[in-house]
Picture 1 (cartoon, rainbow, N blue to C red):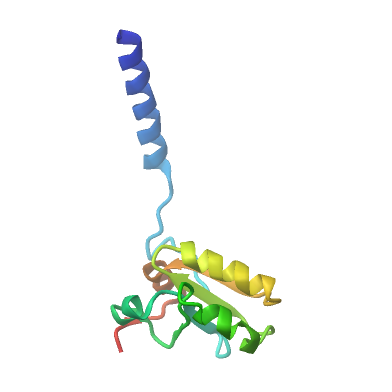
Picture 2: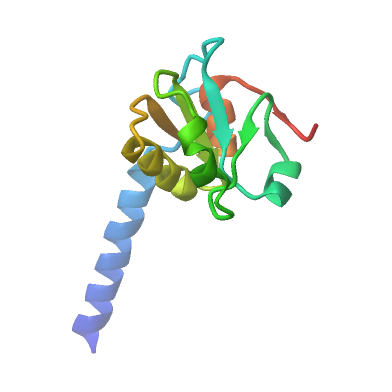
Amino acid sequence: MLRTAIASISAITILLGLVACAPSLTPATAPTVSVAEDTIVIDVRSSEEYATGHLEGSLLLDLNSGDLANALPTLDPDVEYLVYCRSGNRAGQAAALMEQAGISDVTNLGSVEDAAAATGLPITTR
């Protein structure tokens, strides 16, 4: 019983130590991504999520509804694309789909907040 308690406490202590040392993205530490005039920023969330706040000038192509898949044949493979969502998961899936379609310059910016921090683009509801 005592061994189990000590092992549990040790595991929790190690886990907390690792979490405390993990870097977090803040506006000061977030990587910056330059947004050129011809860069296309894509939000792959739902229209409801988009309405709550999106990067100014972003294009809504909902991954889950098939909007992105339907748009793939029309996307210019020679343009830079920046993709984001709520957490980075759907953006990662979208980037993989885009790369499979022959688009090589795709960056997953993660969440809308991370994307705003990285690009300097404001979040808007318009």
